[in-house]
Length: 124
Image (spheres, one colour):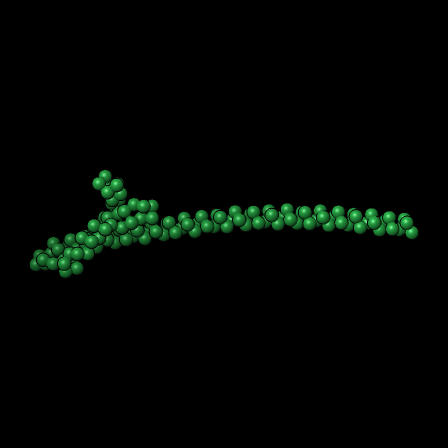
């Protein structure tokens, strides 16, 4: 009987040790999975931020292009014989655009022709 009790005790200890090892391996694997997920999450957030910056720059570039085209059309309309008025009737829109510029996401301000006004010494 003592032999059976000793064998049962040894079996319980072995099972407890094996279960502790399995739990330790599972925790280690869980930590690895969490670390990898956090890295991927960080990369995705960086991609989102990069895409937002790209979108802002794209919109600013298109805006500058369109404002430049508008100014060109306004100037061409003003040069037509017999036409003494600009398309906006008072010339306010082009002067407001020229004075305000278009701001880019990298901190630059661009005029209607796409010229970076931040490079102008008096605007620094």
